[in-house]
Every structure is written in C-alpha cells, then in structure tokens.
Image (cartoon, rainbow, N blue to C red; front, top):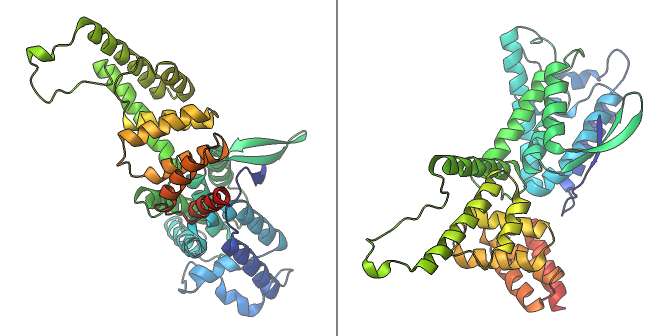
Length: 388
C-alpha cells in the first residue's frame, strides 16, 4: 500500500520541506558512488557509528543515502507528509523539528542496539528516522485527513484511508514491528522517530506552543474523554445536568406546575442530547437541538454547545450554525479559543449567509487574536475581499 496524496493542502508554500528535499538530493549526488562502496571515502565519516558516535554524526547521517531507491523512497515520503507539517510548524520551527527528529531517532537506535548487543558496529545513514518523526507529527496534527493509497494484490486499485489508521497500523505496526525481515534497515530508528514526532507534537498542542484545532489528535482524545465522562455521569446519577442551588428555597421560589413541567421537558431533552453526544452521534444531537429550540430552557454545557455548533457547520446548516455559535459566544465569552469561533462565524456570514457587515465584524475580531499565521492571512484576505 503506497500513499500517493492527501486530501489537505498547505495554506503556505512549504519552503523548508522543499529545501530539505533539494539538499538531500544534492548531497546524495555529491557523495554517492554506487557499486559495493556506495559512498565516497571522505563521506563515510559522516555516517552514524553507534559504537563510538561523534556529535556531528547525529545530524549528518540523516543527509546520506546508500542507493538511488533509498533517496527516492525517503524524499517521496518526506514530500507526502512533510508539506502540511511544515505549514503548521512554520519554516524555522519545521527545520528545528526535522533535525531534532534525526537526533532522537539516532539516539533511539543506539540505545536499542546497545541493549540487544547487535548492530552496534554497523554504521547508519538515511533520513528515514527524521521522516518518521515528520510522519508522527502528521498523525497528531491531521489524524482525520484522508490519504489516497494505491494497492496491489491480484489487482491494482486506489482507496482512501484515514491517516490515523494508515500510519499507526500499516506504517508503524506492520512495517516496523511485524515485518522486520529486511536486512540493513534501522527499524528501531524509525520507531524512535515516530515516538518523538507523536509525543513532542502532542506536548506542543497540550501546552499550546502550537495552536490546536478540532481535527487534531489531542482534540479527538478530549472528545473521547468527554463522551466517557458523559456516559459515567448518566450511568451514576441518571441526570447529566444536575441542578446546583446556591441558596435555600423559599416559599415564593416554588415554581408553578406549568413552569415545572416546562423545566422537566427541557431537562429530558437535554438528557437526550447529552446521551447522543456521549454515543458520538453528533448529527442526531444537533438535529434534536434544532428541533427543540422552543422547549429548551437555559444553556447546554460549553463543550456540548460547541460540538453541536460545529456539527451544524459541517452539515451545511449555515443559519442554525451561526445562531448556535452566537449563542455560544453570548454564554461563554471567556472561552480560551473565542477567536476560532469568531473566525467560523465570519466565514459563514461571508461565504454562505452573505451578511458583509456581520462577516467583517467577526473576522476583524478574530484577526486581532489569531496566533496561526495561515489563519490570520486567510482572515485578512477575506476582510480585504469584503471591503473591496
């Protein structure tokens, strides 16, 4: 199974990734000889020697390749997965990440080789460890993206596979854990690279060094955890929206029978919405929310409200999505990613509902707070188009 393209494209030109590909190819042309001795004599000292490595070798080894297929395969995968990672990390950040991936994959290879006692004397070369780190980063940043693969067995065809399944099961588990039969392949360097890429980018998302979005792996884990908490709350108490009273009830606070029935009906609808979200059925939860506007009393929890607004947006229900986002902002104005909601509203009013005044208002608010350069440029371009 060979990946041939992804369904997302960078917002910016990935200059660093193109430069890394070019540098690798140029160095290959300078150092490669072919035949039994693949590298020129002077280049051999830049390979990684696990038994007694020199500091510079932790980087230089990643720019050397032992054959034409070696360089072509590595650069192909770097092109497929590196462009979008470069876009998210920025040019300098991506360069630092790539070099760190090479270093950590080399460290992983040396540690495992030392423990097993094998391969410690065999020099290592190739960018595959660094590329594994880039692929691990792609897994974290774009787990739900679709990758088109070409497959061949008794026949040849193409199909789309979610990145999370292709990378975890095929590229990591099958290619580097189960099928380790090819000689002179640094499988442990690959695994160390994947581990570095996944863990470091997850950490960057958690501490907000990299701005996250609703499609990355950390957001997926957060949604799974919310569903787990929803199910736990419902199973333990039967009431996912418990009422907390801040003062004693006085006689005059006792509601009328009609009001009590209305509140009970609203609570029942909220429980249904809550249960649907806990089951991962956002489409039904969003539709129930839309159908029950005249029944619901009070607000849904913050994340439930945002999940429903996002679902309405993805379903193309522009006006109801805009209403839900605006209600979210009115209820939870201190939300830490308010600018993302404002950006969504700006796009909806600009491209779908066609309300220039509202679109410009939301886009300007978003542009003032956005930290992602690509989103900020898109926002400013949209404002310029509306004001022209």
